[in-house]
Length: 141
Ligand code: THU
Image 1 (cartoon, rainbow, N blue to C red):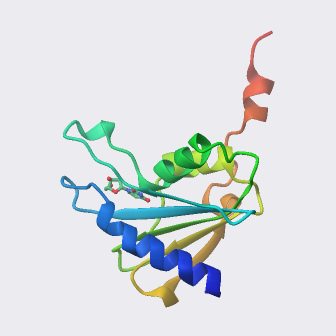
Image 2: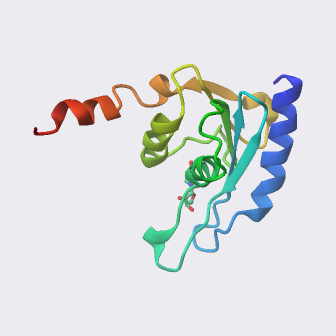
Image 3: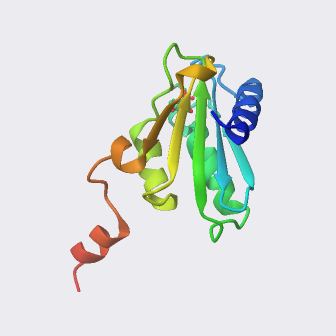
């Protein structure tokens, strides 16, 4: 990890304490870092009606949009959990990443050991993903 990544890693690990996961007891924390250096965070937020809960990655990505940063492209998204291996994002989050992250954007998967970082691109995480182009091409006139 370079110095910037170490700083974000520290923040993401600290924010695990904000995770609201009384049902799964599985805390996840994420941070989006933009080209201009803005940092937007998210944690998973669960609900007694289970499907109403949401993953940390989507909270971070939706916060990024909500803060009006969409013109400031995402450089990387870092995710962390208390897993023995770098955390693996769910399919829904991968699809949401594809909406807001370019092909060069990095997804950094981490756990409590900073040396176990996994670096991926969206294409590696979600090959042959559905895009707005597919939507346009399949719409009836
Ligand atoms: N979760 C995340 O926030 N991100 C992931 O990458 C995997 C799963 C959350 C959803 C739920 O609150 C809990 O972890 C257990 O699935």
